[in-house]
Length: 580
Image 1 (cartoon, rainbow, N blue to C red):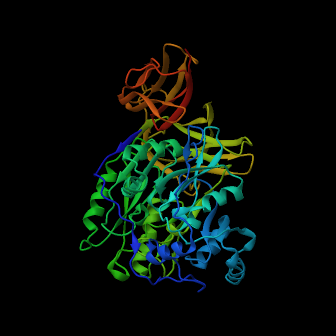
Image 2 (cartoon, rainbow, N blue to C red):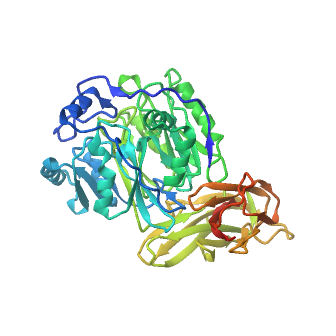
Image 3 (cartoon, helix red, strand yellow):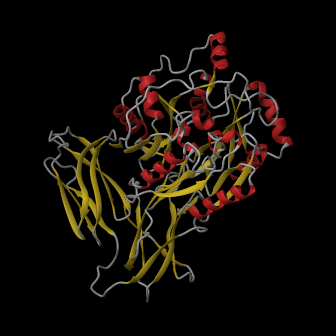
């Protein structure tokens, strides 16, 4: 697994809220909410209770069966996990319960209060599921469950040690939720926090250096060991860990950055006089230079965050994506609030972008920190690397369609139009595994083509790419191909043979155009064992030979291995069996 190395680790000290008084009260006035960072009062209460700080004596579970895929925030959700008493406005809850299930963590002492308050404030209790368990705080993003699909294609929950050791009840919520939902769960013993983690669903993730600092201080893990753990439990091949923008605060990446899709990131921008300005500009430039899982560099979007109370910037990046909706915190500045919504709409065309005002939003937390998406365990997932550069037609569009409901696909379609004319529909053909392809024909003249992919299964689920389709679509320039041009733009017939093999395995593929190719071999644990190709390859057919050895030249033991190919706009993975 590769990793971005930026800066040396610094010594970790626990962040405690300095003021003994807790400033924010919940929206119903029941209690003072715990701050994002632990207070000294919490440690005193923990000592008085006789409870132990979390993480002590925890025996880590073995990881799920590989290969593992960690779900991205924008993948299909069935609901959102929040906590009562609330640090969220009822206007948000009224929308969330229209879009899915509200999973509400609540103590038995507050269950009646929650029921009455929801009834009084227009929340549809038919779409609410309570998880009645002891809890400490509202920060469900930080301590809540992370979702993966394992090597069998089954959904599971991964549970890290919540990096707030004085909040043992919060740390148990992912396991309690997994039990309630009848989902398997796997615990590991490394400290982490959901607000400092974003992943793209395609084995690339990003955090600030808080993850390395805390893992070293709390767990004695080196950065290399952290990367390996993230690969073992989450299937992360590329973990980009960047230095945070501030010396103080909670150091969560979602306070200043957000993945919008596999290759788009929103980064905070603030006034040039603020002490984080230079760091934010440097991070934006750095991230724009990094390759995303699509093979192209990240597309960085900026949102201006004006100074709010206390002289710190607003946190418009701290938003929630729920299926085709984007929920953005508002900060009582009509001009800036409106501009922030416009940034999201421009970066995420076709999404329903809405703003939510609330007096509790802070510079280092807002809506995202207080809500955690619940993945659809039977999701219909469509994956596709969009065509963006100018092409000569015809152009073949390749997509991966994974039906986790196991009910069967009823349609996989390519929709396209030239120069905003009428939409045309092409049934996409299965080419092996979960891959489908359809062709946009050559136009009569140079023009722009708009397209999207749409799939449906027998369970009634419908998903597309872009994920807002058909409200959103991709666009690229297209022109007629010369008469001697190859027939189509495609990654042709990728396959491996013989299978099983003893001495040599061959992997072949075909490119219409020269393209960057990454071909590697992974073991069943998701660990990289051999990098076969990482270079620009010419147009035409390529055939790569693997001799069953690792990068050091050692003969590998018999077993199942996986070729993983990234080229021509797709990510392709297939097993091969090495026999002795």
